[in-house]
Image (cartoon, rainbow, N blue to C red):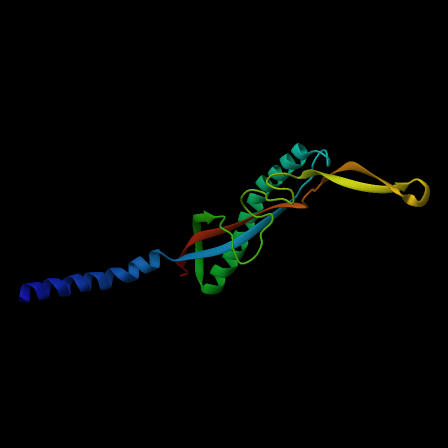
Length: 165
């Protein structure tokens, strides 16, 4: 029984000595950055043009989101007395506490995904004849397009960190 006890104590001692080294090597700093780029379509009345401009703005907003996250991570690391290392992970998961209209993922616009333009019927009633006894209903259609102001991306970036000397 003393052999088992000695083996158990030696395993626990090895784990206790290895734990600080593991904890120091697994430190990290996480920051969230958002990049916004203006949506500038060539034709504000074309669904395809608005969709292409929105997609281009979303792609262009990714480097800005990473740059903002890097600035914030440097600030956090300095305040905690750490030295920032390379990027370990990047995530575009959103906080689900409220409505997100233009975050990562597909665009859910006012007319469905990815519809930026829609045709609405407009009814017009006119009364004609003596005493306004006859009513004529005319249906006109008008097209409405919605152009989002910005294409944005929100990223959570995790950096490795080490204790500053």
